Image 1: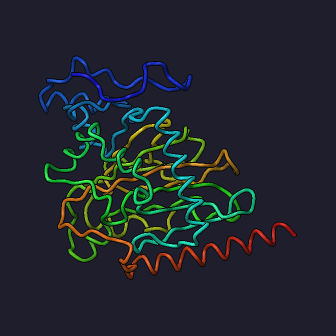
Image 2: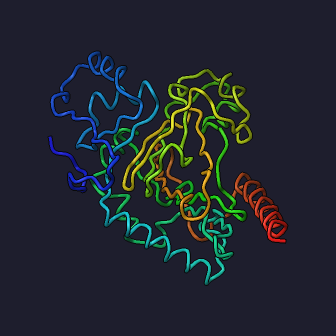
Length: 323
């Protein structure tokens, strides 16, 4: 079975490990696949194929995440970042502060100018981004979510582009511990089914650079642990069980949002602290598209207000530091 990655076999980075060779493992029984997954290092990288393999499925079920090595080519990575830069300039020039009711967040960059932090519905301004995230090579990921899943580029928050960087005026140098299941557990009193997040990554992020952390296996935790094991979006200390999800440009990750996860701030500043990612919504519930007339919901209004306060405080600290 042929792999679908568009990247050549020549590694771009000297420290980049080869993905697991599954050529002889494609017909493993579920039991054998689970046994093998139990012995794999947590940093194992996989190749995206025409189907999710038994070992990949077993690894996801046990640990709650997968890393597919460089599913996007170097030229595609460069094109994504070029398109985002173009959209950022467009939004700034027009003064647009939201897309389809979802606020766009800008922080302050190294040069003191506004710098994009988070943008929903990114593909609304780029046919090329739309074609990338809906490309047939990602069909196995869609089926992993569910046979009836669809790519919701016009639903939820659409395709979300994130930029984390560590500067005095940054709104998002990090993101504290949380699970995506909090609302479901709070209202229903029980854990929801799998909540798989699909992310593209565009920078080389090492353990010492901060980045995505998660606690393997906590996607199967109890509702009580989901509510009270940590304080959502407040607790941000290192956890001895956490695993850093190391990425190279072009990687694709899948992680179960029911697991505890966070984004650790980079200890560096400026360009070295930059971490860029793009998350694609795969939707299985009723079709609820948004358009330019969509209103900002109450949750996003509260969150947007909190981010604006955070931005004002960051600018105040920056001014004091410059005196």
